[in-house]
Every structure is written in structure tokens, then in C-alpha cells.
Figure 1 (spheres, rainbow over the protein chains, first blue to last red):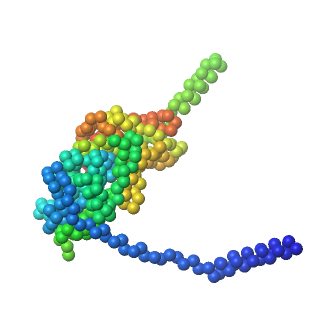
Figure 2 (figure 1 turned 90 degrees about the vertical axis):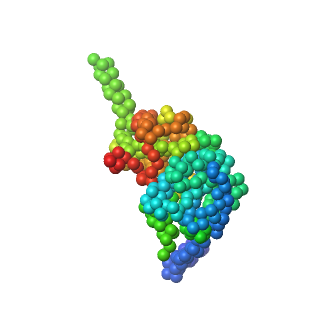
Figure 3 (figure 1 turned 45 degrees about the horizontal axis):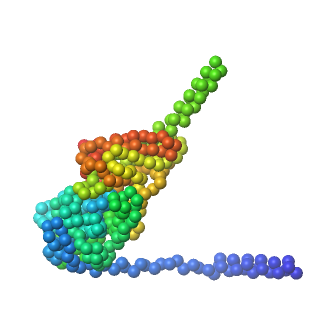
Length: 200
Length: 154
């Protein structure tokens, strides 16, 4: 009796397996990701060591925005060095049409004066700006920038800041136009800047 | 005579033990990135080759110019760079570990005094068998290039 039930179960299972093998056509998920919407970006006003800085101050120029901080041990110097070398490849008339802002994602520790020295080390064109934590959060949100403090026992004052490492490109009309990925080579940085200086 | 040979054997054996992982490891292109003004930390980068037949782990790095020295890596999660300490950096047998910006690095935290371009920083690397190796890392300005070396520059 139990043997018959067992063989029945076995038979059913075998049928199931064969059936699956024949009829089951897993639909491979071909779902093109929705094109990532460009964050809205837009106007902001923050503080530099030499006074207030608004994005609209640079209307007519291509503006590169990098969100970083002076305690940043590796990622920011890598990004900013690439940007600086890209700037060095530009002709003087091209350079005159570019602005670069380093926006602090560590407003608690970064002062405008700290940022100024830090930014200038890479390239005189780079201007460091910061604001209240609320102002920074608002700018970051509109530009789609993620940042978060992360406790590290031995890091200066006990934390580092995880942050988006892309450089944001704002076109001459003030609209967010693109992003340059972290570790992009200087000649590509220069090419991207040129593309935005003289759009086709 | 017998005792002497035992002693000799013992000495040979201990010499064999002392010749640890560090002897099979060679380090190339070591450099420290000049920290920008106001940056309290910076990274040291290098290529560590393991010429031996056994995997080696670097478990510690030390240097006299910063308060703390740690082994770190970066995780790139959707464009967000996250720096995290790692307990060890493994160098496979006959393989190499590449410490470079944006990836594995020796983190020099709380510099005692600002570094100058061209300074040499002695960095002591310690391996999982307790052996260690010292390398002199030159201080260079940050560049976008992955590993500036003398012969590439000149």
C-alpha cells in the first residue's frame, strides 16, 4: 500500500520535473531601467572665505560642483587633482569660462577659511564654499548628492563622511547638465568642459 | 658533538622561521600623497609583491609622522565612496596587492606635522607571521595618475 503511494508520488514528481523542463520558459527580465532623471539642481547661495557665493554669480560659465570636505583623506584629493589637471589642459580663454566650486559635505568642521586653503592647493580656480548643515542638506538634495557621517574611531574627530564622488556639471544657463564620474582622467575632464563651453 | 649538531640544527631551524613572509615580499612605487593644507590625514600607496609560495597577509602598517596608521579600502557604492578600515591586506602567492587612490591604502591619520613634497616617510609593514619590512615612501603632490614613479616622470 505505502509502496504504491510512494511510487505514485515519485511518478507525479517526475511528471512535474519533466513538465517544467518542457513548458517552463522563464521570462528573462528585460526591463530597461527608467532613464535616471537628472536631479533638478538649481540656484543656491553659500559662503566662501571671500564672501557669499551664488550659483547665479557664474551665469555664462560652465560650473563644476564637487561635494567633498577637507578631512577627506583620499577620494577628494583624487577627484580634485583630476579636475585640476583637466583645468590645466584648457586654453586661457577656455579657463575664463569655467568655475569650480568645492561644496563642503562636512559643514560642522569645514570653515570657509579652511576650505579656501584646501581648494587653492589644487587649482586657483577652485572655490570652497560651505553653509549651515541645513543649507548644505538642501543643496545636496537638489543635486542628488548623498552624504552621511560614518564613525571611524581614529579618524579626525571620530568620523569620515561617505559621499557621492561625482563632479556635477552646470551649463552656462545654470541648468544641471551632467556628471563626471570619480576617477575620470584629466583629458576627459577637459573634453567634457570644452563640450559644455561650446555646445554643438 | 651530538649536542653541537642539535644546536646547529636548532639555529638553522630558527633562522628558517625568522626568514618570514617579509623576506618574500618586495614593495615597489611606494609614495605618500602630500596632504592638502588643513587635511589631517593622507594615504600611502604602493605595490606589494609576494614572491613566495604562500599567501601573505599584511596586518599592520606604522610610520613615525602620523598619530595613527591604518589599513583601509574604499567601497564604491553607486558613485558613493565609502572608506572603511580592513583588518588585513592579502597578497596571494606569486601575486601582488596594489594599493592605490580610491582603493586599498595605508591611511596616515592625524599628521604630527605637515609633510613636504620630496620627504621620505619610513613605513613599516607587518605581516601575519610577525615579520616586518620597512619601505621609504616619497611624498608627492596629488595627481590624477595612479602611481607616479621616478622612471615614469623622467
